[in-house]
Length: 118
DNA sequence: AAACTGACTAATA
DNA sequence: CTATTAGCCAGTT
Image 1 (tube, rainbow, N blue to C red):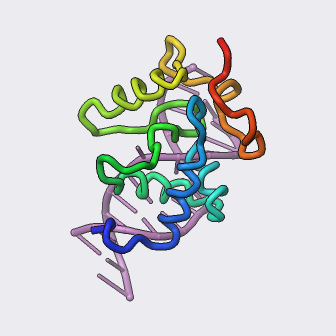
Image 2: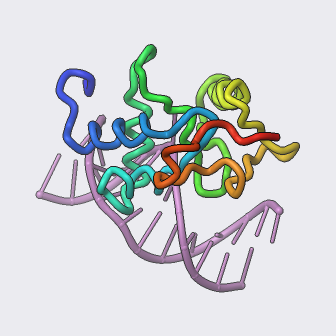
């Protein structure tokens, strides 16, 4: 099991995910790069999958590069993630897609990074 | 150690 | 817009 001793890679990934402010989203690739591991987008997925319930890592703020929720094969997990995001003000379009142009987080904008108006 | 897998992405068609 | 291909790389079997 992973929870016992997390690899440095996982810790870096979790740290990066924790930096995503409320009301914003980031892509897997973005988190990977932010964690100092470019092109490790998939591993970001593994790391998030390995999270245990109740962790402080806002995993729901991570979506894929197309602005879609990437969860698959999980029972209602995609719906849960969508709900968590909606709760933060991030709502998806009718197609189910989340406009990255609008909600994607940029690490540089740390100051005013809360939810976007509208 | 080799093969398989996958919460990814970018490039084509 | 969707579908397919290829590249990717750590974790699991």
